[in-house]
Length: 232
Image 1 (cartoon, helix red, strand yellow):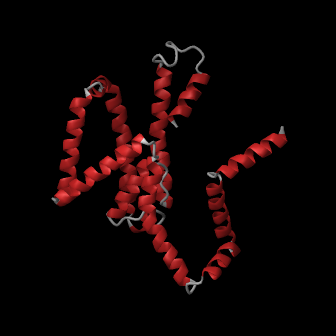
Image 2: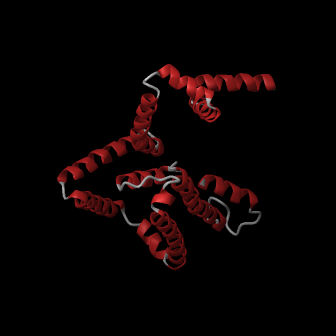
Image 3: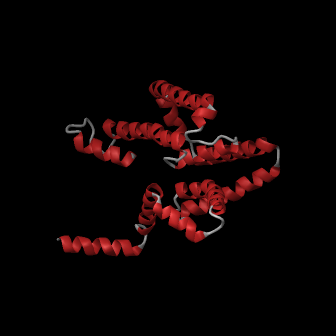
């Protein structure tokens, strides 16, 4: 999102005061505006449909499930106060972001320039205290360290954070709904797949899932090159 906004600003800005890639204001304002707008856009499907729009909302969904809150249409019916609390919190956060952005930007730049040798121990200390304070248990701290090391390896080998978080959150839901669907059809896979294909809505969704999976395979790239070569 930020890259698209930066590229768009670079294309439409005719006479910037400072060249792009050298500190142009337009190149700073456009990506930050896009990032702020993406937060609200990602929260809309998360709250209304229970589908995370990015890695951050995936973490928020996991947090809501921990507190027995299920994002989706029923959240606005069963817990409307929580829905409007989240909406109000987002609006309040954007208002304060504008205030602090205009008044404290110089202070924030100094924090960013702080040496890593000071920041990393402080972050580690706060993480340990936070993990321990949840249940007053050292086991939680050990788990935090294990997953922190795992996260370092994933970052080194360029694993995407979003799919991993979605897998952790959605695996239990997929398993539960799969079992429920199979039991409803007397544990018959043939009847289950026949009914899934016979229903227009489920057939369209199933086809979309198959196409998404097929698009990640090498065969799909070969077919695209073949079709592109014939078109030329």
